[in-house]
Image 1 (cartoon, one colour):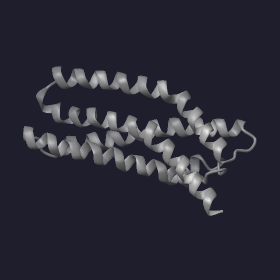
Image 2 (image 1 turned 120 degrees about the vertical axis):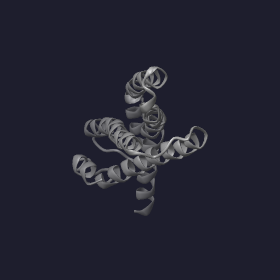
Image 3 (image 1 turned 135 degrees about the horizontal axis):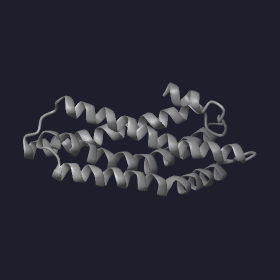
Length: 165
């Protein structure tokens, strides 16, 4: 959270920079809980166990997801730099435009990773199948949270901040 707040320190209007970090942490919680929960169901039917590969997959997902979220937020930051002043409705539109600008990139990246993981899941070694399964679920959850959770949450925090003034 501190790193994200530091990276976005020059963009404190209309949302404080530390809130970018807070939203990133919320997205990361989502990106850990969803794959872990689905893995519990998966392990019930397959007998898979939580092991070091599971922990490694979760850590890899955290890095992948934070990177994807930062790409969206970086586009918001760039668009804010070019805007002179941004009100509440304008911020919502600016975040929507930023999301539109990064949407295809995020989907293409996730889709190619997903295809590679799918091939590894079906044609790879059986010892890494559980690891790949967690990565498959996490890729979907991470893409979802970066596009459909983080950006709307940022707009919501801006609206709450504006209401408190």
